[in-house]
Length: 346
Image (tube, rainbow, N blue to C red; front, side):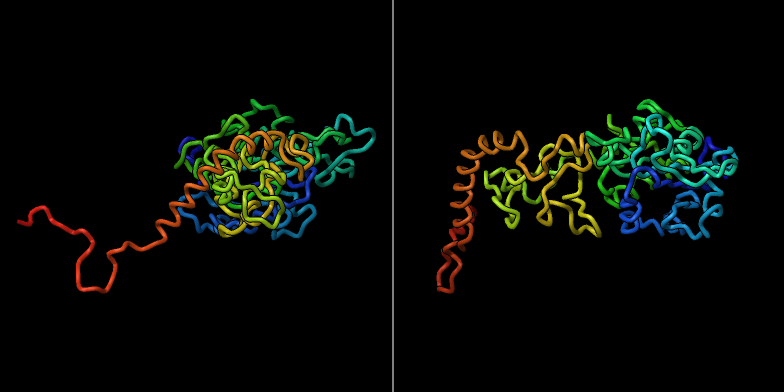
């Protein structure tokens, strides 16, 4: 390990997915290719610190206490530096009655389950960086919707939006349900380069998302966007046209999936006929339900765009027919009819 002022040459990643979660983010990340998680762990990405990954799905450990050993060491202050990755929303253990909402391992002294919140309290302040993977960890997600009994929330709601890690970084939120795999790995790689002293901190927006990934809307990167401009809307899910009228929230959702695709540049909700249900947004899911209904602003925006779109579509159709014909001077006759007439001719 090098001097923290100049960068680290070794970094542990302590990943807990025992928040209220389906483990979908961990599974999604196994499909990353820019870079692949195995390339990071195996040291194939130049300039990164040596990475020790501790994740239950990807761990080579024997499980049980063998798997928990680095977490316990970090909680005692005996393992550093490390990046703490949280997957799943954080329950409110103050309202758990006589039990607990979710746990990670057992307390060695009592044998009772250790709530995930206890691990967060122990690890987050000691972590060089704290990363929330997926919408559940970032903002609460599905488990935090109205009527839930757990009081679930995102990591920043739990730790505070002004939280700073031991490395001086705010929480890094990478939302998605699940997270887009390359979005996570690209951000993690940036954080690791920063840890190595060869990159500045990743730029984050006011919701602590990477700006370069979430600074544009789904609509701005959607290959159906031109249909919206032309006022040409899908009426069912088999259509290739703009899906605003069948429930797509893309015009107001910060997400890059239509441009990036899902695996190897392929897929992404609107790209394959799925509406955007805003799964990357802090207000998800409550502010976007029911999912199959037209968004509240969809009827007004589609009404306003319709006369403009109809006119533009008609004009483009005329131009399209014109440019789909070859010029008259392309022929096999014995005369030049292109109008070529150099000015220097006498």
